[in-house]
Length: 91
Image (cartoon, rainbow, N blue to C red):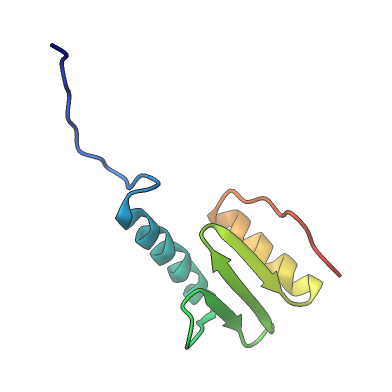
């Protein structure tokens, strides 16, 4: 017979139901702290009134729309918060 060990997780793991909610709560809190507003009809769409930047989130992918200098501002903030990769900037 095998020996089984059981333990309690200190953090949510990818794939566990609460993990997605914890991730969403984390990025929403950070974005609201820099004055982004959550979309009224969709909770994964955001807008910043002062700098006129829109974006949508799908899982851990963020897609932004705005002027280049404004996109660099949010990129610089996100680098402080998370380990990120900028895949492309389209003009």
